[in-house]
Length: 241
Image (cartoon, rainbow, N blue to C red):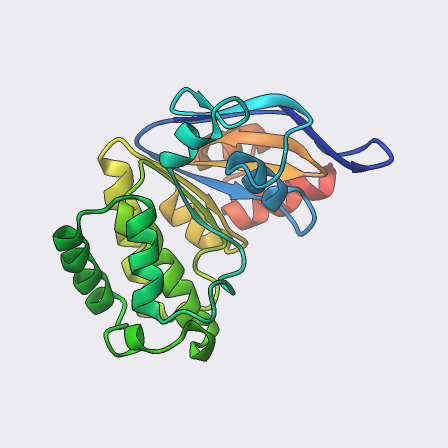
């Protein structure tokens, strides 16, 4: 479970980019985190994972405060950031072993998982190449593989399907569903509203640092009194804000 409690964040001149946000992501669900560019989605994700400090409030990861004991909280997080351009000087297999060492994944089990993931994402030949030589989609795949390698309870994915080919997108969606079905959390930021509509159990819509709506598509349709798609309802609720 992820609990965002009365969280605020300002960057300069006291202007709040996140304003007293409250949001709970329950075990066993995929929650889509939606909003226009500049709405505050990545800022929230960076606070959830301890990359940015929280000005006010707190975020709990399975009951552990990301502020008071970030080590314990981070052990239960797997992050796919908005940019996969990291550790470019390492080979793919070196990066995965680095992640495995950090999270103390048994070496025999690690080898099996890496082989399975490399086959699933068609990355067998790429593992011995440096990440700097990868395409954007391949870099995205290796970061996703790193998260799946240690199988944390709470997945936090910031635009994870950007740059992926159709097969990889399909495989990732299946993996996300399987992860949530085991009473785990998938927190999923995306601009592709059709994917969110078909994949997520609930959505949270954010704009200008505030949550405008949290619930199912059916609840959003009821609130807006329209039997429209998520894309149409999203545009209406954001434009009305």
